[in-house]
Length: 45
Image (cartoon, rainbow, N blue to C red; front, top):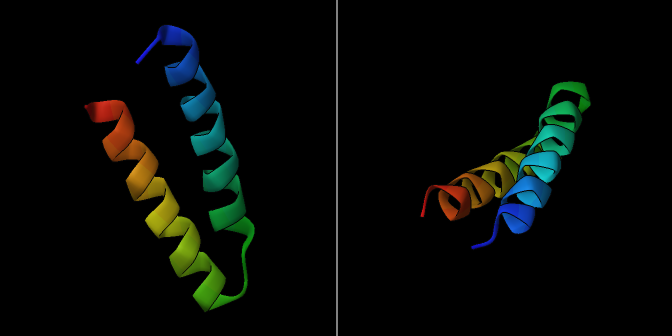
């Protein structure tokens, strides 16, 4: 994975963390959390 791709994923993570923090709907919040986990694993590889 290129540095550019990793940076894009990190930016997306930042957006997801903000969405998670501001979300009032528990089901949406759970989906955001799963998305955060998937992106985190992708970056870790």
